[in-house]
Image 1 (tube, rainbow, N blue to C red):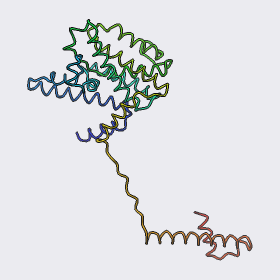
Image 2: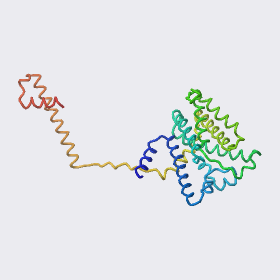
Image 3: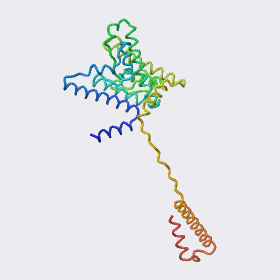
Image 4: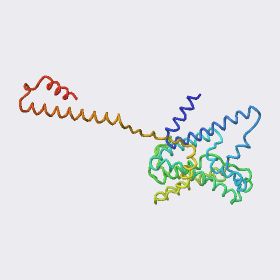
Length: 296
């Protein structure tokens, strides 16, 4: 078991940021699933506890659990929910890294989730259609974050072609338009809150890509906060101190250099003798010295 955990840690460290985000989402899903199974064995449920990590539509409840604006984007309702979100994150996160940096991906993932969550709460408290749902509505899932990555990539490379099963190659801008258009059409569906959050994430992605094209990185503050939070957990690798040896070691270096110079001078003398008097004039030791030097 320890070797498996070590191997997973190694894969996490070696993977790019896109894979690390996927690993985090899967790890959270598996941990929650195992806890739920354990609680069920005791006829208990973690539904009430889990709701403290999900994002509420009610502003009053959000004030009690403000951390949920971040935690909700790492939770998923079931296997198919996390499967499709992670597939989209893998496809478009990998593509995103071709055009942007890893820190941009991390910052946009969080910013897209935050913007999606804020639009979700705003819509549920503004539009009368959702008035009766505000108090008991909760949001979870990485969809808003993923849509931010999709929208940013499509803005950066609108004519980039992606291959789709049954549909062939499609330009990225059309794929993004279909995804965003579907969310607009299904705002009043059973999962209306999720579709509103998707739109918030997509707007965040467009905002990020547009601002970055003008030289402004709106994910900078989020990345600084992430770096500050991660600092206490990062391992500080101490560089080994350079050892300076004096005395005997210095004498060894001097002797070695002296021997090298002496050998070089001797070879130069033999070569001069060879030029003036020919090979037959060399002694046996001189011939051996010259032969040994030719093999170096």
